[in-house]
Length: 96
Image (cartoon, rainbow, N blue to C red; front, side):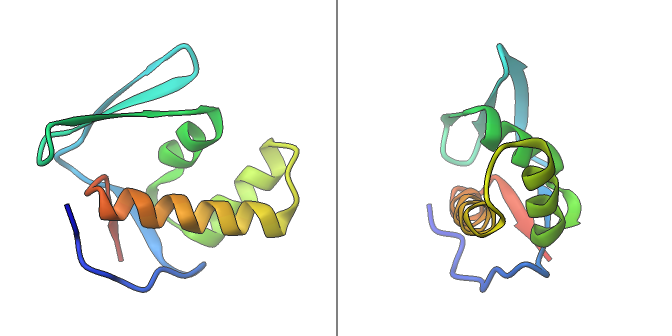
């Protein structure tokens, strides 16, 4: 399901889509996307990024990931941007 290509940068603000339901089970987030009738199961780092999608910027999310996990800033930045773009394409998050 394509949400259209919106340029996402470190300054983009990200929020969980209001129609999404999720629950944490054993450190993994299970996300239900009603529009596609699919479940997404997120690993520990993706779960944390999902939790941080509360209106803060991708840059702020990246900073939190670097502080909380053993990852280089450049890798965290790249991976966070890719994940947020993927979540946006799947209709899981809203970009401002």
